[in-house]
Length: 300
Image 1 (cartoon, rainbow, N blue to C red):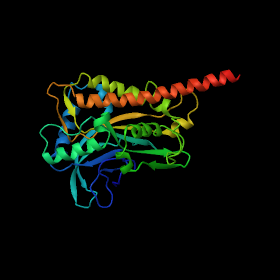
Image 2 (cartoon, rainbow, N blue to C red):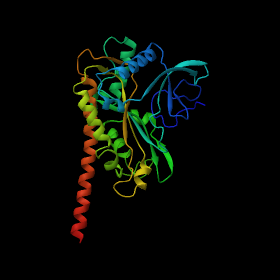
Image 3 (cartoon, rainbow, N blue to C red):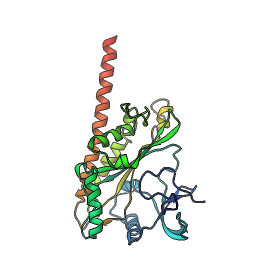
Image 4 (tube, rainbow, N blue to C red):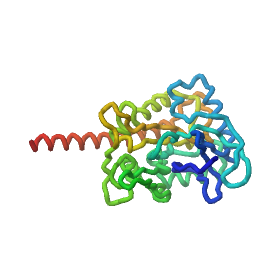
């Protein structure tokens, strides 16, 4: 039985009779092939990427596992349509917090139609894509205090400036209520989620190392998904206990082009900018902790 993904935060959502992705109970994600050859193009990318011996083994972990295409009943009731079959990257999480970040200072690329170019450039200029090299497309947080999810409104997210993007990244790893706009995010989970040898930053830096040398593909209009589960942080006991299971995944490859031996500076530049924002948050948390420690010591 296929159903609408519970934890999708951006893109086409299968609701109100609209065409969108579906998931099953076996950890599979079914993405309908987009029209205008985009879906076929994305399928060809997955086939190429999966079999490309030049892609290092450790890089494959950052991409959803591809299981081919399959005809399934579409979410809009239009009958059976071809779908990409991928691993559901949030399968195995009970209450994941998820953020979708589109990477690059432009989402258009050479030889697109005039209509597509105008659509992209308008959105790029209205969001932080041009100014920062990335934009937050959507996110949801599991609020452990309320035992429920809080989702940022799409209109609000797309209106973020640099300060708004920074606030979202801080709120994403905070334990105080995300719904209360008067509260300053406490970044309680920043060290466990963004930091550490297996945290978000370490994974982003590993991707950066590859993008600094890879000339196989140009990842136009692709997104990074950040996923973790804050309950695992709150419940852990001792340093050896399971932590946030933070992970990074790249998604959305309908506009990937052949790299033709040229580094993908658009994606790399946006990734570097995004990494800086994550680093800044971790540094601010470290300074805060140092200050608190100093105050405690002086209080003795």
